[in-house]
Each structure stands twice: as C-alpha cells, then as structure tokens.
Length: 128
Image (cartoon, rainbow, N blue to C red):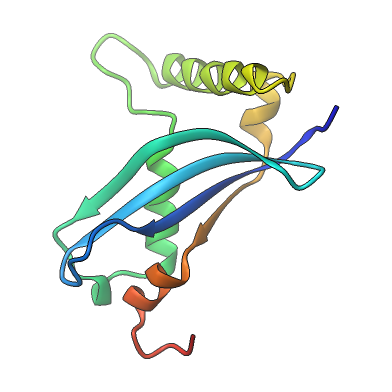
C-alpha cells in the first residue's frame, strides 16, 4: 500500500478578470508512487487588490491558509479545529483506501504549486 509523501495544493486563477485577485485551490495528498488523492476541491480566496501588487509568496501563504485548518468559531479552540480538520482528511484518505494517522498528515510537508496562468497574472513580463 502506498504511503503519503506530502500535501500539495494547486493554486490557479479563478475568473477572467485581470484586475481582481481570485484564486482557486485544489488540495491533494501525494503518494510515494506519484499518484494523488483529492482532499479538498471547494477552496479558494479573493482580494480587492491587484495581481501586480501581490507576490507568489503571498499567494502561497493565503492558499495554505484556506485549505485549513479553519479558524475556530466562538466556543471552539484552534486545537479543536485542527483536530477536526486532520481527522476529516484522514477519513477522506481512508475512503480512498489509504490508511494514515491524522497526526502524520499534519506533519507532512505542504507544497503550494502555482499554475502558469497564475504566475503570468503575478508577472505578465515573465517568460513562459
């Protein structure tokens, strides 16, 4: 059975408007055989800022944040939300036939990959 190697979030432009920052995020677990298991496909974020005023590092940072764990609502702690988040991802992996501990998932490296389209929005003068 393959093991989980890392978490990968694919960030892409979400919308046709060049003036408005809008990013979609596809969150996956990458296995040591190179295959991936979809964890979340309903995440993303937007800003009233312009693409030219952002950076690849800021996009990566915000994208990591939106794939979780979520901020706690009143009456819940960050630890509660983290435990819920990692257990939800663990159950998603189990449905895909991969047994992994929630704490192990939380310790994995998490890479955010920016699409060529997103990189071009950040720097239209970049080659590509």
